[in-house]
Image 1 (cartoon, rainbow, N blue to C red):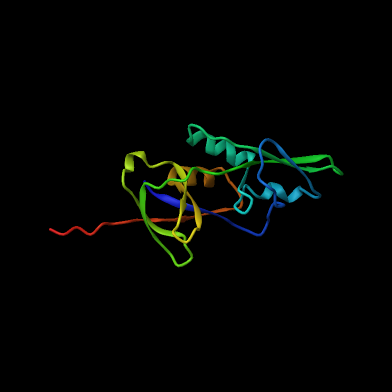
Image 2: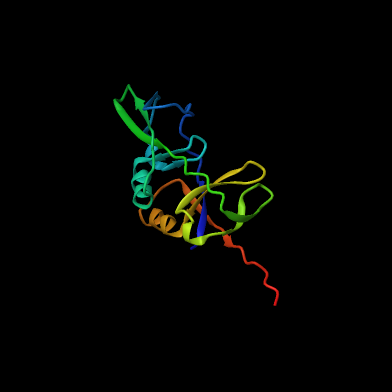
Length: 158
């Protein structure tokens, strides 16, 4: 199965939030551009559309809502905290910036659909299977780019 690193694309950022339990409401102005983003890596938030897609592929996910409220226009935008589980049953080669370039799983049959990989340098990357990446592209998920990871080929001596 092929995997991709999910990164944000573009310059639109959601206002920074503090992670806490339960629904979080942030009062802000001009949320009109929030519809142009489905993933904000900095805040760890995904849109309602992207959440619905991820729920199709994961058996159990806990999402905490974050509501951006424009009180003046009486509009709101709902995003969800997105923290894929950390998975460590793989071998990886990392680029200089700490992002994986090659990846292989010790037990491919239990490899998750999406997970967080942490490099020795402390860089966290969201890794998504090809099925999720293709589905996101078909559904027009915005503000996301996917970079293919190469499968790690072991040298075999005969």
